[in-house]
Length: 227
Image 1: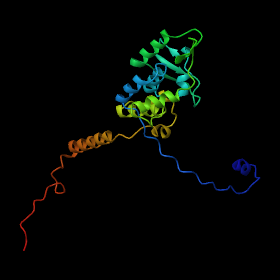
Image 2 (image 1 turned 30 degrees about the horizontal axis):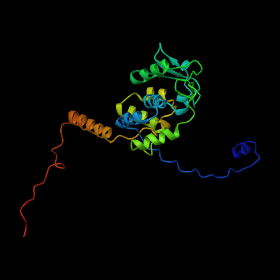
Image 3 (image 1 turned 90 degrees about the vertical axis):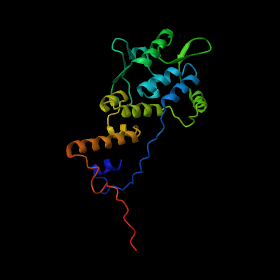
Image 4 (image 1 turned 135 degrees about the horizontal axis):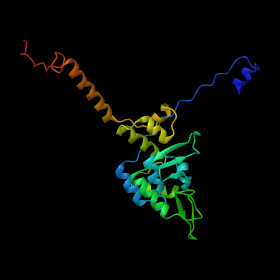
């Protein structure tokens, strides 16, 4: 508002507004062994939601809004048109994700076109609106009381980074347009840094020779005591 007023010469000086410090990114993730345990204790209708999130990094709203028109069986991809950043994207599916999608397709009902649904008391499939209570209860059962559903998106990105997957391709799957936002989801991996330094040491040894026996690294033996 002030910038528009300054542009229109209604004010001469822009007031200073200090920016709030950016909050630290969350570090919660879902380990593979906990994923299997959580899958087992969740209600059956929530399990496909968990699998899709864990295997694709999709947002909860995108998953609950999936319809069968978004599934391209011939191309083996999930096509998203209405996304948060307005950019359509495609996410390939294989393995466990494809199995779950086919199982959901076999259980579908004509009155409900959602990929993820629950069966109401009347026996009809209806869209999933909310499952927070079931989620929190299941997370407590597997000793993950602080786990948020959005942490699955962070888990997907972190695992992709640790696996060395091409960052550009993963960003196309998650819908991140900038690396600055993407990196907030990628948890640092100490072992990858250790491997990187080991590669550097190997390179230097091959190019310049092994310098592990230089004067700086030699162990100095204590001499005789001086009176």
